[in-house]
Length: 191
Image 1 (cartoon, rainbow, N blue to C red):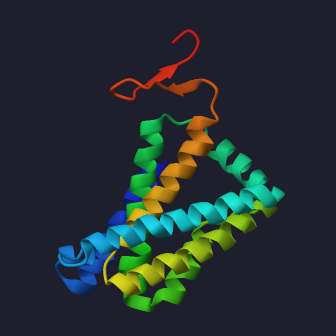
Image 2: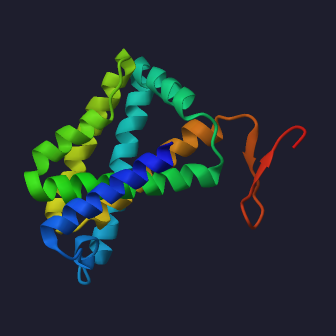
């Protein structure tokens, strides 16, 4: 279901940006002259978000409850599934929220809507909404600073990859990632 949602979100972004701009330029995604700097900013932003989340996870019991709830919702994933969902969600959300919404209505509304997407009824999900709002502001700032989506997409994908792996792969006792050349997953037990 996540795959379908993110594909629809990306399609909505394509239609929105396409109707506004006509053709969607490669320059929306990457700059020929500043791509290396933008890569570095994306990696750095992901690192900042991961450190902030690690501190929250260590000192806020609500963060651990949130991870447990998200793990229940997500269920077990293979490493390749976790990375695939992270890439698709990071791209689709940044294309839609920064490329389409921010490009039309501004950074504040894009960040608020991004935070609202990351919500739930349980108390622990309020922390997710707050964190997503802060991350959305960071992604909006990266988009303004760079003039393209490379840094926010990379930061989002790296953050999601790390956390999805941590929540859905590394903590699942039935899945182990073999150190072999292909890095294939092995199922413990009868499989």
